[in-house]
Image (cartoon, rainbow, N blue to C red; front, side):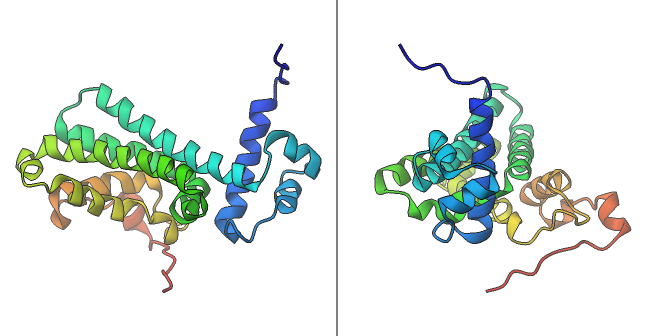
Length: 214
């Protein structure tokens, strides 16, 4: 008979993942130890191992969990059968909402996936490719001629170039946030610079942006 888990077991696992993601995002996966994760979680190292067998399992759970949520967003939006332009806007809005709630996990997925073993890395990257394909389908539905010219996916990658690296320059306490940026990204991608509407909050004060080094 399988051992019954405590009621708070899954909540504790999620807490550990969130704090490990924060450490990995700030210090990098290689430079973070299980001792530091245990300390951040206010757990003994022995207790930490009750939930995750090693640091690698934390990395894999963070990466797979984040990309799985993104893939689920694509599936949920596609199931709604929205008009093509609304579908793309909704994908952008939902993705930036996910990024806002998972900045650390997104940084880990972006920067530390290279530390995964080949089989695990390919599985995670396969899910990422499925996410890209979902966006490319939306672009192709909006502009079928782009799909026929094999341009839907390259244009999708340009779109991800806009949204995937927001965490490198946007300050959490700045005038802009992910919710404000979502319609601006959609306007810029769909209509060009002339289509971008200035948010009232951004017009009222200077936008705080962290410079990108390197």
